[in-house]
Structures are given as structure tokens and as C-alpha cells.
Image (cartoon, rainbow, N blue to C red):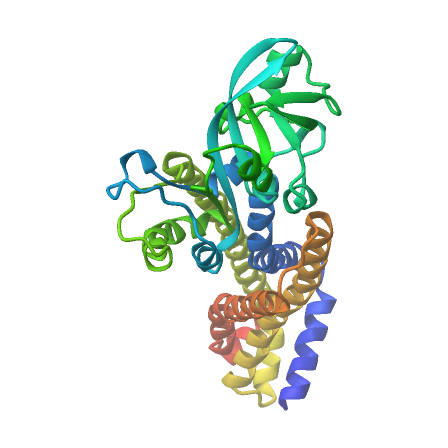
Amino acid sequence: MSLRDLVAVSFRQVIRNRRRFQGVFLAIVLGVAGIITILTMSREIKKNINEDLDFIGGVTVIRVFFDNNRNPSNRPQWFQENTVAALGRLPGVKELSLAKAHGGQAIRHGKQYNLLLMAVDHPFWHVLSLSSLSGRLFGADAVTGRKRECVLGEKLAAKIFGTTQVTGQTLEINQETYVITGVLKSIVTDSGLDYAAFLPLTTAQDRIPGLLFPDRLYLRCRTWDDVPQVATVIPNTIETYNNSQEFLIHVYVAWEVLTRVWRLAWWVEFLAYLAVGLTFVLGGAGIWNVMMAAVTSRTREIGLKKAIGAEDRDILAQFLVEALSISLIGALVGAALGRFAMEVLSHFIGTRPPETLFLLGLSLGFLLSVILGIGAGLYPSIKASHMEVVSAIRYE
């Protein structure tokens, strides 16, 4: 029998007994679809979690600042332009923001309030995953235009005005009047900023004596997996590009929380792959069972084929190709289901994985299906090929 005829006969046999193979098909379909979905979408979903969840976003942020109070050279240090550019080019870095903290005073109806002044650039809000409770957070136009605008922390606004609905009102800070554009929503990961007033970095440098240059940098990594590598190379990068002989910096990472996130992500991914693996195991067991049942039910057919000249290798090949056909048909349907799942998830999270990842998942799914079909169908095929002709023909 030619290979073409062998494949055609095997596929017809599988289609004819499709009801018997329904459970096996389902296991293989889900296994292949699961592999494709996990491989293609896990990275995109991780990126989306890093982007959207404030808690996770805080984990991916590295805080770097010069300790000018204990600086060995007794000269204040700050992040220079070439240093910032070099840090922004580090692998795994998504974006960064410059800031400067300074003490300040606000006056409202003759009453004085001590507060923390934060001079920040416009990426500051996105780097730290911050949002407004009311109004808006000033943008690039306020920084480049050196506008006298400010944003108040939620608790500071409530303390000074008795309400958080203060957009459009003015506040005197360090003897300068600023228009309040919005109120910052309360921050879980850094409650100290709830009592701060935020000014455009350029405006603060122009109007606050002694502010000097930014000595704080907030650096956001693409994913939590990039944090350790980026944190390790930051000191050497600053030493190389900052043109200063002696400085003292602190690199802060929320290692405890990051470790919990790693552990949780590992378990989720492990359980996902375990579920896919168990699905394939069930599929393999199903193929083995249905092929053993097929060998038993077709014993006389096997005997007749051998009686008219079929050799052992012909019987072996037919049953092996039938087992392989079951797994390949399931893999085809699973590939279509995996593609559909990828398209749906891409639509919901607003990002699309590289096509190469889909091709990798597709190749791996088909490879496992081939291994599964051959591995699970080999013993039943060997058993069928070794049957004695006379005993097989007389089988009832």
C-alpha cells in the first residue's frame, strides 16, 4: 500500500469512528490551543499588567537619588543630561522621570502650612502610575512653558481647603501664586506624596531659590523581570556618565514585594503549563485506549488482511498512522482555537504579540501532537502487527 493510500484509509477510519474519539480530540484540541495561547499571550499579558496595575507598576519602579547630605565631596550632585540619556538606553528600561524634593510653605487665608514641594517633569505621573482624583495632572506644555501651575496631594488639598474639589483655585507657595490644575489620587505605595505639592520642574527651578538641579530619578522597567538587571547596572552607569569623582547614591527597589510578585507569577505560569501538560497526558491515554479497543474490535479484519498477503509492517503502519491522524486532526482544530483565543485576547488588552511567537507555539503544538500520536499508538500498532493469522481469523 502506498503512503497516499495509507493516509487516506487511516483518515477515513478516524472519520468513520469520530464519536469514539471525541474525548481524545477534545483533550488534544485544548492542549494545543493552550500551548499557543500561553506562549503567544503570556508576555503581552505580563506587559499589560505592568502597565495598568498601580501595585505592580510600583514594583517595576526603581528610585534612585543622590544623598547630598552625606556626599563625600561636599558638593551637591544631580542627574546630568548625558547620564539621564544613558540610563534611558539601558535594556529593560521603559521610561524615566526626574524630580527634586524641597521644603515649602503655603499660605491660605493668612494661615501657614508646611508642605513637601516636589518639582517634577511631565513623565513623572506615568512612571509612577499616578492619576488625578479631580482636575488634571499638568503635562509637557506646563514644563516646557514654565507655567505657574501645581497639583496637590489628596490629603494636602483636604487639609488646606477642606475639600478636594479645588481645580482652578490659586494657592500661594513660597511667596509665589500658582493655579491648581488638579488633585492627585491617594497613593498606596508612597503615602508621603499625599501631603505634597507638585510643581513643573522648570518652573520650580526658576522661582524657588536654592532648588538647584534634580537629584532624584524614578526609572520604570518594562516588566518585573527586568528590575534586577537594571538595578545592578545603574551605579556603574552613573559613575561613567555623570562627570563627578565622588558621590553617594541610593538605589531603592521594593524587593520584598517584587519577590512576592515573582512567586505568584511563577505559580500561575507553572499551573497553566501543568494544566496543558495534563491535558496532553489525558489525550495520550485516550489515544492508547481507543487504539487498543480498535485492535480488539478489528482482530478478524487484521487476520483477513494478513491472509491475503499484508505484512506485519503494513498492519503496524496502518494503525500507527490512524493514531497519528487522531492527534494531527486535534492539533489542527486546536491551532485554529488557539489563533482565535490570541485574536480575542489581543483585542481586549490592546496589544498584539509578534507573529513569530504564534509560529513557535504552533510548531511546538504540532510537534507534541506528533510525539503523542506515535508514542500512544505504537504499542497497539505493534500488538496488531504481531497477531497470528489463524487466531485472528477465528476470533469472535
